[in-house]
Structure formats: structure tokens, C-alpha cells
Image (cartoon, rainbow, N blue to C red):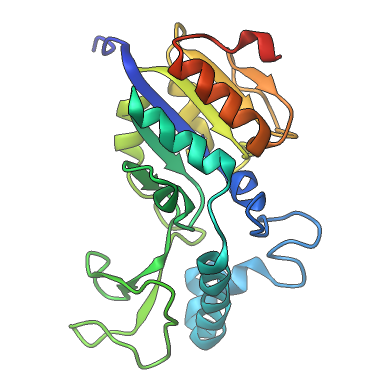
Length: 240
């Protein structure tokens, strides 16, 4: 099957916990971060949910409150400005809604969203809850307990095919704030085209994807510079 043509108007932005960390949200495994002192499998797996759903709900209720209090930072806002000139898809591993609040209109949350709840028996029954907590006894229309709309270990990520199809056509790809260690979604960047301009912005990564330029620095400093150059029709090679 022939590859689709590159579209000079398409940009894919791939973001991880590092971009939201600069808004004050704790990252996945960093020292002092979200999972310290907590067995991740107890709060982020179907087994943990089956064992103690009350504990899992309390964990995500706390995260939901923290995310609601956070504010989009300069990096989130800069990503949103790209829509002035380009067709932009934001693919994020983050479960907060900071990209949407910054103004991005096409955001794929591959690991789910804190501000949604879903049925335990029918994953198509999804409900917006904003910053409200989920309690034991809160049920869907089929009478099943509601759970966080979060992808737990062992569950299938959301909308991978849509993200893959878009990155195959993108003329520019920017990955921000991710160590590229969580698969299968980290493998998405391997689908970027050879002729596309490709940048990874992160303090550290496990392995730089082939053909990508790696920039070290804060997202709030460098993302606005990158987006301004792209809005001016320029490349960002000089930032290395």
C-alpha cells in the first residue's frame, strides 16, 4: 500500500507528563512524583480496581482536583497558536485537559481523561464529570458502578489508529515532555515520515527516535520559540 502524501499544513504534537509538570502537576515516576509510596498496580490496573475500588476512586478524585486547579502554561498556549496556520493534532499521554483549556481543538487522549467517567460494563457509556468526584454507588444508566475513564495497565489505548494515520501525513512532528518509554504509544513516532521536520523536546529520553532532532530545555521556554518559527514558515534547526 502506498504511503499517503505529506501535507505541509499538518502538524502532530505529541505530549507527555513533562509539559504538565511545568503547570505544577506531578509526573509519573519522578522522585517526589505521583506514584511515590503508592503501588501503581493498586491504582492503575483492573486487578487493583477489583480489589479495592474505593481506594482507586479516592486516588483519581485527588488527581482530578489537582488537575482542575492547574492552569495551562506557555507551552500549552503556544501549541494552540499553531492552529492559526496549520491543521494540528495533539496526541497526549496526559489525562488532564490543559491542552483544551489552552485552546487546542483536536486533542487525542490516548490514556483517557480525568474529567470523564465510564461504565464498568459498557465502555461506550462515557459521562462528563468536570472536577466532581466519583463515589462508590455512582452508577451508569445500566446500573453499573462508574469508574475513571483512564486506560489502566493491560487495557487498550485510545484512538491509536487515528493518530497513526495523521502522523503519516504530517510535515512537522513535535514531541514534548515525554521519555518515550511507554509503549505502544511511544512507537507512534516511528511512523513519522523521513522528509518531515521532527523534534523531541525533553530533559532526558530513553532512545531518540531515528531522524528526530533532540532539544534539551524547558517546554515553557522552547515550545513558544519552536511554534513561532513554524508560524513564520521557518525550520528550527538553529535551536540545537
